[in-house]
Image 1 (tube, rainbow, N blue to C red):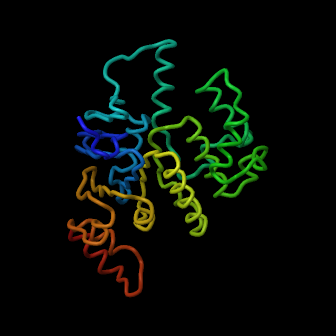
Image 2: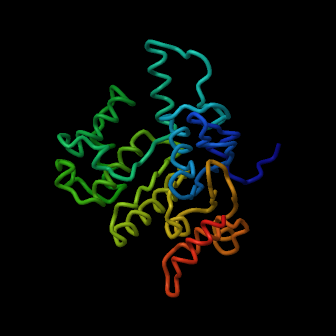
Image 3: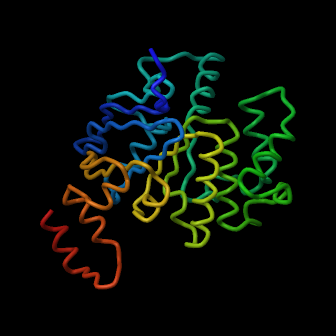
Length: 276
């Protein structure tokens, strides 16, 4: 078969389902992420976007559906393997998909320096190698440089800590990077720096990004495609430009109208929300 010239899908999610009692947190969710692509999943709290992301990463169990990374299903079926083979399999799965959280301070050990944190990750996944050169490369890649290597998390700014978290995620060379509200806790100017950094990394590495966010401004800046979720289901999907310029679903329109701007009427928004 001739090469179509289109990128392969690094992530394919089909019919994903997850319930907590009578609540369907994720209900028949499907989407694809091409190599080097950037997909945004947006929605308000309770929409199911974060649960979907956690299932993709492997932090939550799915009740049904498939999550394929490189054509391999990440949804566990049956008992799985124990011992060394089970550990090797878990590490291999971890290398495929990495996650960057909203607050890097909670995911970084406050007693561990930047260099030690990166070295620990590299030793776990790539034992027996000399990691000094790779650590320098990662620090340069996220715009920190070697001067930050000896710093503890509390000695860094919020933006610098998020750069460390990104470097640690990139250390294992994942196919997919899930960013869960990864710039929400940062000042606007720092947000822009991190988003520019992520754009540069995507261009250099062809990694696929899955952005989980409620911020439509972030989605507009950094994603190619968008999925809008409400009550666990996808209500609209398409190219970011088309969905945000001419939304078809009332809920998507409500999200756009809820963004504060001149002439914004919160009472009208509240009434529209009640009607929906």
